[in-house]
Image 1 (cartoon, rainbow, N blue to C red):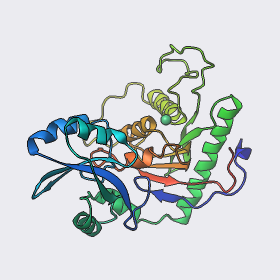
Image 2 (spheres, protein in one colour):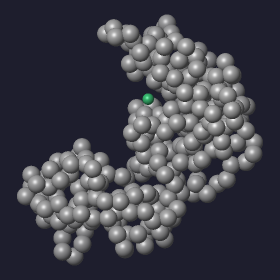
Image 3 (cartoon, rainbow, N blue to C red):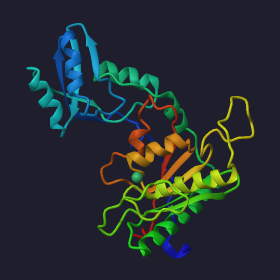
Length: 301
Ligand SMILES: [Zn+2]
């Protein structure tokens, strides 16, 4: 199965909110001026129109409030402004999050106000050791092997392994199994028997399911951990690393937040560019993991 990936793996690249922010890059967006009493209704209509989390949605200026409607290419924001009789105006905004507080201040003064995430920025400065790079390459090869096994079953080529970095042990392994052969799928996600194909059985979800089954087998009568109890794991994947061939989708990325993984390492960027890297830019999440991309010199697709 190791032969599923031929060729060397590159050096891991740290991903921060999709792209690491090292220099100011502007992109097109739309904003509008609005009276304070009209701001709430407008924001309600903008609920489904997502803008990058590092950009402030509402900007209080001397002349009143300015609301960021949408980034270029999203017509929903302009439509919401028209509904409220407001004129959408073009504006240039920072495309990526700032790297430090000073950068955030200068960008905010010159362009659109941005938010700075200290936790993510601090992690971005920590270099990887040679041992960490070697461990990452080993983990990614195992993920490619799981993806190869999925492909042999007629599934999308994607696989995932969850590794304990302290010991190097593989804790759980998952293969993509979303193809159900066109049959309606009524099977539940949970059960005593191993799950078969299911539309939600993405490789990451399958690996988390395997980790949960392992945990349940090891601690069948586990109670909720109380503060100060040192011997029980507080969350399913605390301190562990997740390797997956494809960038996790939003569902899988959020499941990894809930399970408290330490790092997510993927090989191939999601088609929509709206996956795990962007989710980690959400400041209000109660857990952030590091995100890396580790590509293969010779892809196995
Ligand atoms: Zn997914």
